[in-house]
Image (cartoon, rainbow, N blue to C red; front, side):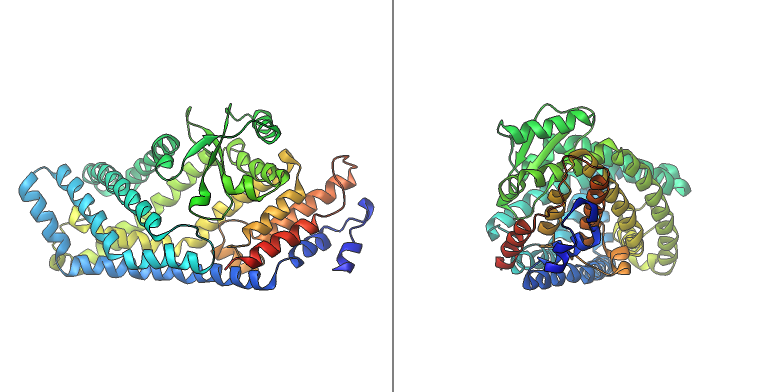
Amino acid sequence: MEFLIAAINAPSSFDAAAATDAYIATMDAAARARSDAYFEGGYWLILVNLIAGLAMAFLLLQTGFSKALRDRVQSIVKSKSVTVAVYAAVYTVVTTVILFPLTLWQGYFREHAYGLSTMTLGGWLGEQAIGLITGVIMAALFLTVFYIVLRLAKQAWWMWGAAFSVLLLGTAIFVSPVFIDPLFNEYTPMEEGELRDDILALAEANGIPADNVYVFDVSRQSNRITANVNGLFGTTRIALSDTLINNTDPDEVLAVMGHEMGHYALNHLWEMFIIFAVVLAIGFAFTDRLFAILNARFGKNWGISGISDIAGLPLLAACLSIYFFLATPVFNTVIRTNEAEADIFGLNAAREPDGFATAALRLASYRKIDPGSWEEFVFFDHPSGRARIAMSMEWKAGQLALGAADQAPELRLDRARAISSELGAQN
């Protein structure tokens, strides 16, 4: 450690690689092992969730449940669209119940085992109930229109279905800050003060239409730090978690907010709409072919007349889940690229490289900090902690070389060690 620090003593000899190693070297060994185990376990969960979803779809089709549900609802309501809405609501409830043991272990017991959740079982179950209610409503609305698109567009459904899905996503982003987010967290205006003023000044400097900053109570659910600039067409809102305010220093807060504002300023939301539409259209085309193959082989026994038959929803969902599983590296790469762009934007906007570096160390409580290159390519939807700290130190080296008056070569290693102690104390 002394050798690493010695390599960073003066601006003229600031070594970004040594600075990166110095920050990472502060991480508690036990905390790092726990973080690695948690994150690597997530790799297997991708496969486990796929297998569970496929098994559930097979169960609903092979037992005749899906066919019987469609027939029963259709005999009562007659209308195809109403049949789809009722089927979607029941399907959402049934699949939630079937997968509940896995959801409970994955979302509650596993999170507590790694010291990441602050929720009681009752509180967690309450949020699951809220999620189920909103899920039933959204599924009924979405699938009703989606199956109308399927029936009208016929062979071109995959293209029109993707366009409709993107439109729905935009609607969800528009209404989420107003109607959805408050169901799970309380949003209150941030107290007046220097930090709030600095955040608003950062927003104004980067063209973000906001006259207030909101704090939401993530601490009731988790000890993670988070923030966002969310919303569309007048619902845009700057929000940060109480854990970010209470558990970090102001330079870390500004570094994180600079990153979040980067997504807005760089138009990542609109860019993702386009990318999502293309990727989803390919996925729907893939699903169309795979559905046709499987339906030709098993459709008669399952009572599915075609892809526009709501009884085939479990099969359609299974085919789409296979596509998303295979496309995991593609999705992660697209998102990770945008996150890296927001990182460099945030460094230029907030000018807090050490704040960003120590914030990356805090995120290492649940994100593996130093993965292999292929591991990061396949499984990471954000740059790794090492990549983020390295970017921060390289940015800092460039600023020092230019003689930036607001940058100093010293690292915040005392704070990094304190963070390491906090992470090591979690159990």
